[in-house]
Length: 93
Image (cartoon, rainbow, N blue to C red; front, side, top):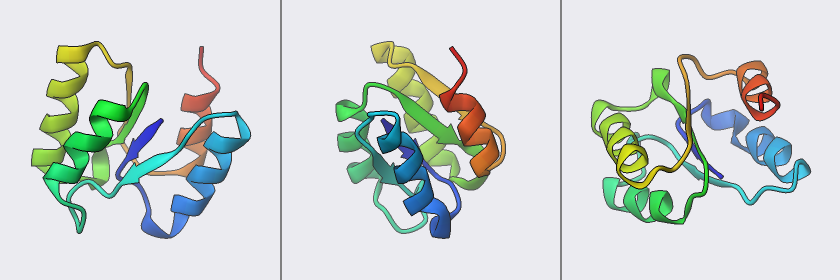
C-alpha cells in the first residue's frame, strides 16, 4: 500500500496501522522533498494507493490520479491528513 502525503511526523503511525492489517507500507511525501520519479516507481509497485490530497503538490496529485485511472489501481482520496481518516479508509470495504 502506498500512502502519498500526510503529516510527516505521523508516517510511523501510518506504517504501524497498515502493517498491523498485514499490508506492506510505502510512503511518498507528495513532492515536498521526494522526487516525482520516486513517486512513479512507488506507484508501479502499489496495489492500493491512499492519497492525502490536502497536503501534496498538484503534480503529485495528478500523477497519482492518472496512474490509478490508467492502471485500475484502487485509490482512496483523503481531503485532509489525519490518522482517524486513514483508519476509516482502511476499515471501509
